[in-house]
Length: 337
Image (cartoon, rainbow, N blue to C red; front, side):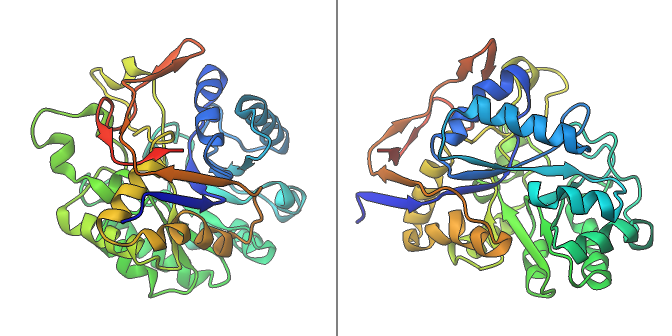
């Protein structure tokens, strides 16, 4: 039985860092253990201009305070012309498409995801090799929103075969099955969706710190995600979707959607992969697949975990903010060395 594990250049390919005081609190918690992270652009206002992009990148670097950490920047999807995309291409890793109003700070997202309406931008992205990252949910019944989005993914994959499409934070077996149907479809998977179902969120007393969008689904969906992650499928990669909200906005009427896992993700994943006898595959899920999919060269970093109990803090606080992590107050079987 393994007593230690060293991961090379761990990557988080879907991360929310927010801004201002919250950014200053949470950015170091990711930068400490990850070599790089793909940062979401859904600020208020969203990141849509070159100036806003570079300014946000600098604020992240200032807050992170680790030289061996690279924030991979994204733009919030809108209709961009090719000349603009050529200008920003070397400064971004992708463009994030949000259906309007579907999640936190997505009110100015796309109201209708129609291939022909979006064609000018998507064709320019295809020509320039800029991936499209998608929050894949409709506005339907909450448990069916991702499943209902599958035909949209298929339409995008068929109409833009050169466009690399990342199905973000997939939660269903339907999404897993779609991976192998189209060469240009890829996916990120979170920590929480590998571990919990809707029962954990709302089956007993409501657990606000497990509530996120997409919401956790059924047992068969979780099992499909676990299988594809544990077997290091080359088209899936880790993306925490770690989404910090102040404690008072989570433990409140109108609970904000988002699970905060950034400082404990590696410890949880080590325990999960060990339990299933798949520790050797964690390196691919946490880094190697992302390197191949995005073609990036992040700073070199080695993170060692040891088989020692780790008590998850009740909260992480500073800069006038307080965030409660997933599994607060519980003990994990792996710790950071």
